[in-house]
Length: 94
Image (cartoon, rainbow, N blue to C red; front, top):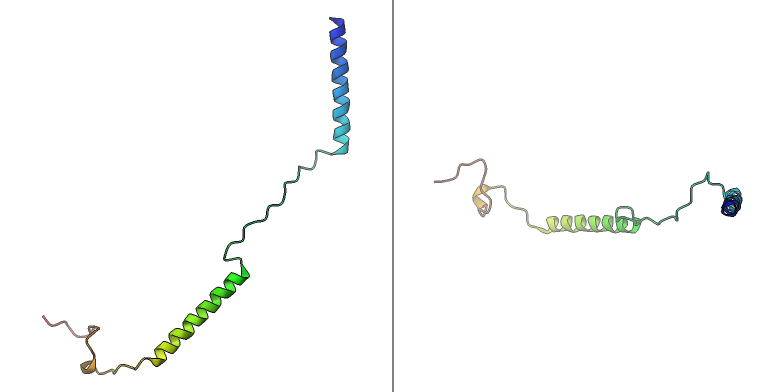
């Protein structure tokens, strides 16, 4: 029984010395570093995507403006109106 106790103390002492040496080499005060993960870039962060959106918006505005300038202007006279839109000022006939 005494032999078992002596062996246990020697094993404990050996492991304690090993752990102390490891602790000196790498201090535990600094947390372990995690690998830096690259975040996925959303479309609102991407400069090329934003530039393309702006170009599309400008192109659409330009086309809409050119279509409006090419359309013949309607006469303000209500008698010449095609009747597509009902007048708000006049009551509807029953």
